[in-house]
Length: 309
Image (cartoon, rainbow, N blue to C red; front, side, top):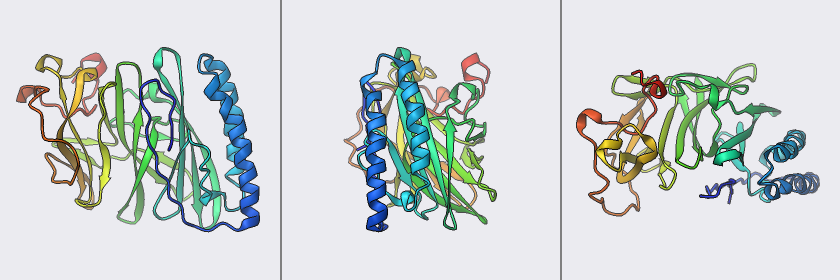
């Protein structure tokens, strides 16, 4: 269970790794994991001192980078690092570590490492959270140095032409008023560089490089891969009252599931998708906005913060 730091919620992460590790290498990694846990644990006790948490975190990042370059570390589970999300691609070529540190006024700072396993050669890239520099996150591209930070909990691998893309599902605890769910895309260049975002999500006449849902921090939203319909599925988001249309801190999920289905080139938006889910029967509240104010909760509108459409 991955436990992000938050006063409001815990985001579960399930990691299943089945590649065997030789015993002598495992011993080295077990001791390394103990050292990592020793470094990281004080962060959880310094919740009121962000500068001190960041100082400790810098030590942790440097140590984790060294450990991930050890033999067999790529497939080592690191189960005791319960506050760290650890996701591995189905092809065994990409592994993503993400975690958060809460900041002032219930804001969040995200940290991450991407580990690449290219023909047995392992490299580690540090991610730098630059969410504040994304003015139009639905269309802007990112990199390791400019990352739209999130806690990732699922990787969907997708072949596009001769390329392999890794669709990342994540959460941003954001602040006291709203949370976000994020669909991002990770691609790996031939030289081992990485990029985030790709214009492959299509909603009506909008093409997006990533999808960001924003909703009330008091609500819980579904965003997951569904094998039964071969789609990314998610709750429809609606405002509590029509007057709140466009003010996403007042958006909450209803029981209808929408989705994105891949057609070989684009992930296409599908409304009211047929997917098996345990969600209870639809409640007549909250109220749907008028059709002319329809908004599925994506931040796809350019200049939303400034009122420019």
